[in-house]
Length: 394
Image (cartoon, rainbow, N blue to C red):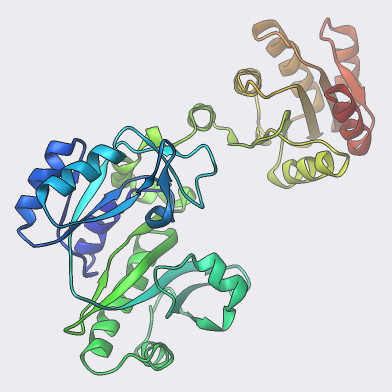
């Protein structure tokens, strides 16, 4: 689950991570009032969308309008907000279609002496959270990792202990931080690592992380993603979810207990098991097709879930065909066949449907489909299924 920058900074402040004063607003007039309330000579108006690269992004209909604007008066803050609100912002992470800006964050300015990068993720190799820092603050970290990976410094830490003092000293030496800034870095980095663990984050990123002229380390950004598998421990965070930033079909799938991610292709996939779903998408691409989604109905799928899955798949205007790939284990093939037959009555299939069944009660399941009125193209294995659905949608 992702949240906005202004929400992340409120959580940072409560966790002892230094941030600047700011106000979230939804109208140009509120932006002007927020500038006055901050009381400084400069402020920054930032588009609030679930994507990075806002500072270098631009509004589709007005390429000169950036997603982050430095303002020196209330009128400038008002104009910046007017140029952002209700318009689509395109960044390196949104794709060409962009995302609509519904909120902006008006934040106080500060005396910036240095810009750095800081991010925390889980390293699947070491099975530990890893703190990453770089001198290349304000730059897309993906570009730094590709072109100058030696500029990214990492420290894995024990989640039960947190980041230790000697690790902070190592990172400060590599970043060239000393004096008062080093003391501030210890407070900042240890608080960030504890925040990452306490909130079960999948990502916590600050870019840029700045050091002021007085040596204080401050988060000028807050990009946070929570591990959805741990949200049962953080039910208070559910109120931070912005459904307008999420794909409607993915919201529907979540309510039905389905794991669904919309993609850009035209071959919809309905599969049980995440690994099998990934393999199904891979083999579709291998044979020249493009998957329209990732959809895992799980091992215990029932008729209601399969029916809702088909509603979601067929509601995608790009869908030209559906590949059902089921390995009957916990869910028997007869159960899936029965669910498919019921779904066809409820939804109606208006695109080619290729079905590959394997596993428990597979022969019985295949016969149920053959004896039904459902227009199905059967497949004997995954390769056969992929070839048939690619041919049917060509």
